[in-house]
Image (cartoon, rainbow, N blue to C red; front, side, top):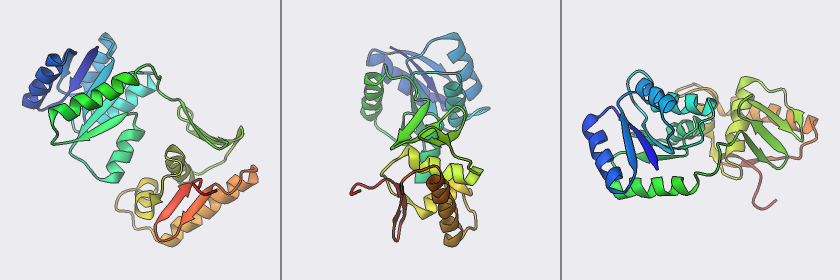
Length: 225
């Protein structure tokens, strides 16, 4: 199995390469995002290990570009960022998993083995839940094939919930994803946005899928519904 490690810290990249080669992987190394993309155009990789912060192109940008070009291999993101909003963005870019620095080599190998077992699964172009469907390539959401006319913020909100159905999304996280980190947005503005999305879902015949979790946030679907 062929692996590309994209890591600008040459000492860390060398150490990772040694560990993976000892585990039986065929390993190549890139030290910036552009080099990683170039190598992916030249060779077929089963797995990528991408550092989040790299020169020229970040791991996030590399993952997003590769997924756009139908790369179907597993992507593990290495990051010093461990906040929920950062990890959401990392996974939404096309990464399959993430590992927060510092980490142990046996944890890295375990994550790669898990990605290897899922290798036959192609990158998902659509995400669906109870009639709702997100088309990743066109960035459109529909309910039972009826397209929803959503503003950018409405789309960001609903796609966040749709990618993690039945998982509660906190208000602070939703605001950071929809309006941006550090945005000065009131709870009333978020509630108003949710009401608009609910009305648009109702207009195409959808049941009340967006559930309010009082004191915390929202989720799509309900374990007890």
